Image (cartoon, rainbow, N blue to C red):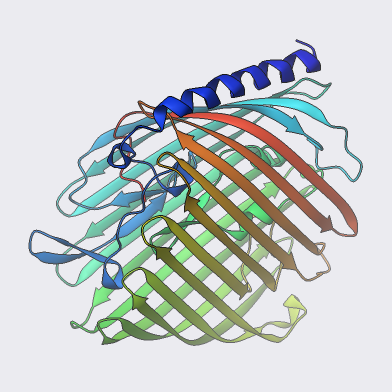
Length: 440
């Protein structure tokens, strides 16, 4: 099919689907079960991120859906079930290979998704997998990206609980720009993290894996001790380098009131790979449930590095803010400066910020805007980089688990002095099985 014919086909499909939404406007709001990115009402979040169930308070826990449909609720009240669906998209990409001077092309993608959620009275399991396949109308080779994740929550008894998770991906790094929007949990709100602004030109095939395990001990009704350990690995065939980091964190939290908590923490990281050094630090933080639908979290403290790291000391921090307005819109803001490895390797003092706003504008339609920024300082073995990511989406629910969206994505970055930019305009159709998952 010629490029002109391809765009003509996309235009005709778009017009037809848009016309179909006029009739769908009569749908009742209660029939829309997707998240804000899917064009739905927002659920109500209780104080301190809890909801009432069976006469007692239960802590809400969420995991990000790999198919970009928001957050999956993890709780004993959610029945065990299969997850499946697919996304088909087409449009235009200005720079498929992330080059300093790229050649534009028409694109199309197919993204099948499958998973399983298993729930028992004490343990919740979630396994997900998505494959993103891309094709081009110009002379570009087909590309793909495989992503998988798992999450296990277990309440051993009234005092002890475990949280284990792992995530991995393998494929062409440039495909991430076209795949399903990868969300993160921001106090019960689906947000976009700094990873959306992390791209490298000519990175080639990327292998990424990250695993973590955490244990929480409820010392009393107001005091909790948490211990966590994690390890990540990434390798880039185009750059011929591999990086890994192991991290250990311990924290003591105390509830000063039903809506306000304070904590102190210690953390350490050990880099091994292209960069070999260690860092140690600690600090304090707070978490405030300002209202039923507004949450604020702040933490920070000094960080000391060994001489191999180059920079001897610094200040690490993280901050988050999320709020929901009248069940029809939501806002989130994130910012951090951390000495840990990112998707792009050990950028020693990596600074990042992101934010977004979503609003339900009709009974079935939602608009969203997300912005992300990430940057790292130059090291002897790893180039500095910075990038900015913006996306705008208008999505609307059709019927029987089917939704459509128009989106525009833009990226501007610099890696080791090489500047590049990328734009993409996509029309997407997303299908998920009825009752696919409990989504925020």
